Length: 195
Image (cartoon, rainbow, N blue to C red; front, side):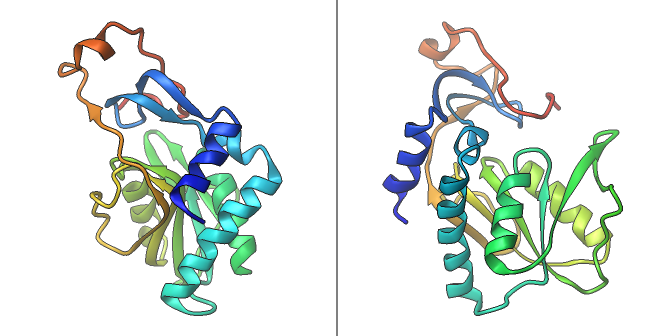
């Protein structure tokens, strides 16, 4: 699946938003990718995650992982569908007092090969925190994945990152906004509070 095809899914579902947005990282951007709107359509979620699974298998070979783990909220649907495509279980982490934890009886078998799955990666903060949780719980993270890498390859998670699409959009510190962005009211459409 090409970059344009991925972005078409976002545009057609109204998930590619323009304005002044506060990202999960606290940075500001003129573009926000509301993946939940794309993933609300099962056929689109299946198509996107099938293409991502093919990318992963092409690089790592058949049966590359034992488990897929995602950070809640944004990564849950992607993680589930990606795990379904790879034929393995899916679990997710949740924030408890600001730190990702496994809840709901989820466990990671010691030494299990785990793929971390996200919808969109910008700075990699949530991804790193999810990876740390997986490792604390005995998993061996063999790679990270996402539908859209907003850094377009600049984020370094310390392990392979499999992205279906790179889409570089500038982000800014709140005190370094360009004038056209500063004129707009900032909104926070994501699932995580400011940190």
